[in-house]
Image (cartoon, rainbow, N blue to C red; front, side):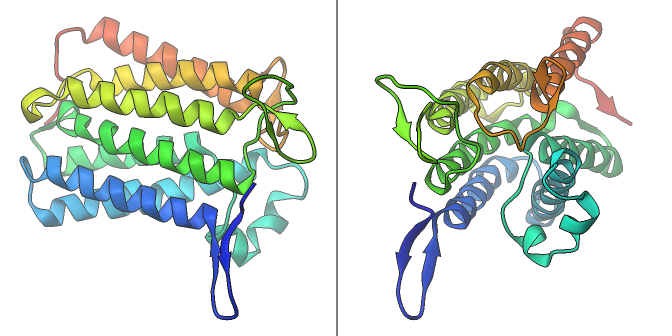
Length: 248
């Protein structure tokens, strides 16, 4: 683990916030390249900053509070370091950002869900970079495993599950980029991304070793959410096959 990449008398460079910053910056740049083909700079900034940054940040934090068991959620939420430090649940941020984007599309009128399919591209790449930050910081670590891919983390050899997910997300990035041929929005790209990522996440949860993510019966919280998302998306694909859902 390398939670601190550099330290001196005047500066300490932490790996996790650095990679988070790189992920957000690169995602903004990529989304900007796609978004300008359809909307202006102001619309893009409002969508990305309020929806894909602020709301996703709050959603990820609130979801973490709901699954954290070491101390009460009320006590943890009173620490300013929590809100500006580590402790995120990706699905919480994803759901919050998705709801904001849906409301945003409805507010600006005559906009289809497919118009925001391009967001899958920066989301996948930014998420992959964020997982590299997780690996360096030692969070979201894997279960104990002594094999060719094992890494030493938290006084044991473990699955580098963060790297597994980063690789899968990078492949998802290239796949989604290919689907957006000629910058044309693919009407079902969002549901396809959600299904594929949910399958990836559900599978990788079996290799996780941290218990902070919470468990509900035989599956973890993220696995139950993954199953719910898959069912919802399959239902959407069944009822709206061949159609682009528009907000009027």
